[in-house]
Length: 365
Image 1 (tube, rainbow, N blue to C red):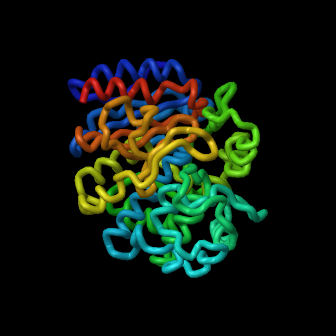
Image 2 (cartoon, rainbow, N blue to C red):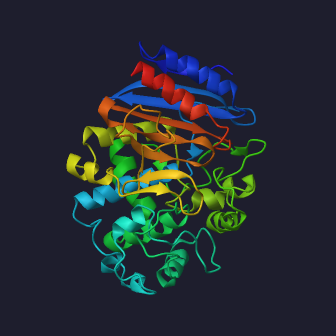
């Protein structure tokens, strides 16, 4: 496959890298880049569904790229004085104080150190309220703040309930009101069936948590993901796309995701002091469950030892990746934001697509 779209002068190497990436994908891919407010790369290739070409307007499930959108909303609420990272969760959500969690800080939820990586209760994955209520009653696996482990789905239930408690609004409603409508971003949480979305597929041999070798902890990972990534039936279902799952059911385009991070860099969404607070290190280390090296701000992933945001591209990089290969974020020191989207899920230990693109972008930018 050959990519189609636009690149500004000086970014020709990115097009070459994109063609290489497209050739390594059975499905569709898109890559968009802004530099200081200007769209400099907008490329796509392949198919969104059988017989349907991928275009600049193709929507795709963002999986955990959604977490970066939600982290942005949290930063906006912080700037408004509605939510404080150092405040106790129970200040906003009194029921959360149960089971020894009275002193848990909002930052511990956002930085994945709260110790609630899965839901004990048997409640539907798509029911935000039921999952939040169950987590409020649940005891953490460790003393909050003492370990870091990626909260793949529970981050969303916890963040959604916090947002609802301080605003009285659903998270998808807030996304539309604060981001999508005023800034023309084609992003949704709670996507109606009438909106066309790229059909997701799993590459042969796709698997999650590729750093993990311990079988006992593998069972914990399975509890965390609740079978979501085991079959394309669930992830392609209208029920999943329509759910306002702040951890992973957001839908959008590559250009809108890159523009979101461009707006953050420009100071158009939050003051610089709030963004600095949200993108400094709040937790880091080897994931206590999956063994993956990681580093978090307040809901944002940060530059890490495995080069998620480009090897040495920018030590201040932040954003959020998504299951199967999506990569969205920014290099503040270069004034660059980017988004790579795809509908073919590849395993992390063999997927070089985003790394190839970011390496080419680093050379160009």
